[in-house]
Image (cartoon, helix red, strand yellow):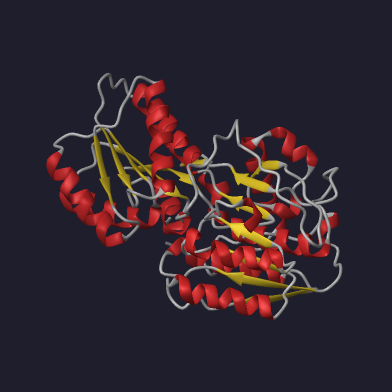
Amino acid sequence: MYATQRSSPASALPASRATVTPPPLPTTRHFDQEVPMSQDLGHLSRRGLLFGGAAIGAGTLLTACTSNEKGDDGSGDSQTVAGNSNSEPSKPVKIGFSVPAGDHGWILAVTTNGKAQAAKFSEVTFVPVESGGNDPAVQRAAVESLIQQKVDAIVFLPHEGDKLEPTALKAMEAGIPIINLDREFTNPFAYRTLIKGDNYGMGVAAGNFIAAELKKAGKTAPVIAEIGGIDFLPLTKDRSRGFKDALARNGLKVNHQVWADFTVAKGQSVTANLLQSAPKIDAIWNHDDDQGLGALAAMKQANRSEFILVGGAGSRNAMDTIKKGDTPLKATVTYSPTMASSAVAIARLVAQGRGMGDLAELQVPKTIVLASETVTKENVEAYLPLGFAS
């Protein structure tokens, strides 16, 4: 998931997330709540929030399976606007949308989901701007054009948070709420609401699954490897830390660690080297399903399958492979691009001065952290509508 690069410190633990209290916006009220949730804002309810991450995820999937028509574009789009008071049209609003270039399956799905969600609201005018590749200067100019157009809110996934934070601040000072998507700005004044995934939680989920599988197989001194993304990124460090912590709780550790930079080509080359240097491996966690395509190719080429493999993100490709069951890939832990759909829905509510569903509060929360869920052969059918094409 190249898309999860951000400039912030490590993401918070699911059970002890920090909250921040921003200054009042010129046009809206603020609340410093943080709400763990799964992907469907349109059906978010007080009841769902009280149930916790796993139950919320299940509720979301039920919605996806019963209330939506899955697109045929592989976007993983599963949002709906039916059956909730938030689905009722309100005042017309213009929502700006800026994300980095779609050079990665996850990012492409973010863009597709955001556009699809906006189309479901009759009163929303969707105003996407070209990122011009992965140049922060180009993205800055694009967002400033949205400020000049005086849109009502902006969904903003910055290519580099530190370089684009001043632009977000400029929008906020102009009275345009920023919905900060995925890559977190360090300055809480730079956004009205943050919605992101749980990188640490991904590592914990992967570690817990591997530990359970190895215990089930009776492995007493297993060899465990990790294929990370870009090693210096905070998100990668968060994921590795969660993985290490989960393994440690089970008396296990990582024996081999390589970095694939979130690319298919690098995934294949580093995995080939890993397999060559380690004659026996019992389990591997690969942080990203896109680079996992290369990892699987290297495993096939080396004729190695003595281990279990766990992926990361929840791509459709990975889920199809898990369902088929003929490779070492036995599970993937989610970091869904459907957060873009939720970001657009949040932007609409914030711009209209409305709260979320039947929450008691009058306004949208400050921070929303998505739960990372584990997809296996046993539950993959329920998750397939959320998968994206890598």
